[in-house]
Length: 144
Image 1 (cartoon, one colour):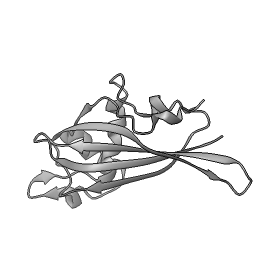
Image 2 (spheres, rainbow, N blue to C red):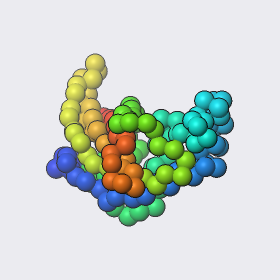
Image 3 (cartoon, rainbow, N blue to C red):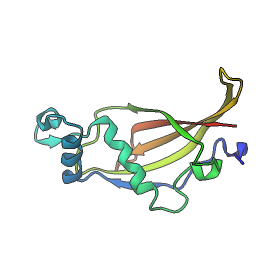
């Protein structure tokens, strides 16, 4: 059963190390030209690279904000993902502190008359100085 009191829940912070080799592999995997991500000798990360933070999130107990929502993973669908950057994208070699939160929960009725529960999870990405460099927003939907 979904816990609707989870709205506003902040999960435990975790670290994402942006490793040169992993960024290079990611750029290759998406079929991009590595030169498009080379800026004055530094490798900048593609926007969607931040999605790899979920690999690190699951290694830290209490870091996944969806645990507080208690959705049924067999019914939940990843509906949307977007990123906002508050300056240049991070570069390889950067260490980011990430923290997710349950930003918003709401319902909508589908065309077939079923109730759908939407959950927005927002992850903040801070650099070593504490500056907010990016925000990721993921929307999960589950039929009720």
